[in-house]
View 1 (spheres, rainbow, N blue to C red):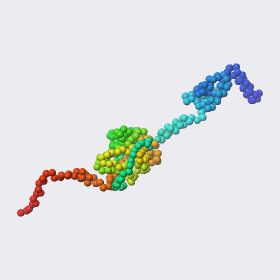
View 2 (view 1 turned 120 degrees about the vertical axis):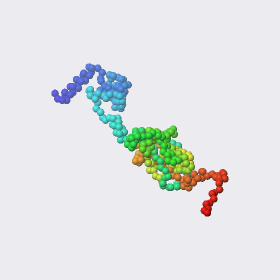
View 3 (view 1 turned 180 degrees about the vertical axis):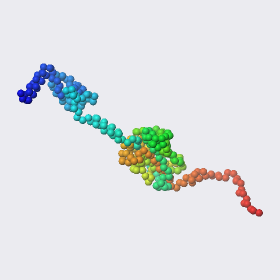
View 4 (view 1 turned 120 degrees about the horizontal axis):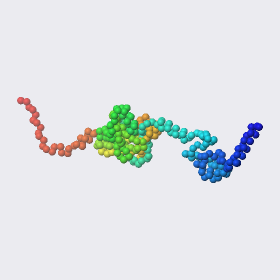
Length: 316
């Protein structure tokens, strides 16, 4: 008997056995089909048309997320790529490649109006004072303290020099918690949290304030430089720098972010992420010593009759 004849005989025998067994099984419709399209699979358990509809539905319906892999003769169905698994692996690799620590992101637009004023610096390119604050998440501050001194002292995120101070404040205006590590103050932040830079002037003269975040100028977003212009703070007043200046009426809020999502990181300038600086320039024409003299001037300096001067000494 030839191979063709033998195969035909086996096929006839198989069909005969199926006709005796009862309804035609749904060949090619795996068990998971009933979980995806129950209405189609249960429409006619014995009709060939129902089996055909079930097969057609399998071509277009995605298997249920919790359904087991369909079985073929007791073996697991072949896999044609696990896209979900691949995406998970890529995500885990990306998380491992992320740099630790915090940066400052380019947040939502917020109202913040400024206007132009005339201000002439006493020293155009040399600030009269510099203040800086560093920041990181709690784990980063702990690591740097172990690296530098092995200890840290908790305090508000404030730096003061003379009559001017800067403070990192949260969304409610309260100073952020910070740690003094050696000679530096590290503010402690959390990803997504908003902060502002508060500037307070307790002196009788105006200052121009040029501020930077992560080495970038807060007004134009470029690399910070003393030659760039800033904000003017009047005597005995304070104000808050709310974010990256986007117009005369709006800013993009300062929000702590991952290093890769920081404004500096996304613009290709991540070298100085983690530090906030303020340069203060005095106004030309205002001598502090002269201001203090005038402030203490007495309209009636001689309220009482002073004694006459002593007689000059005359030797005999």
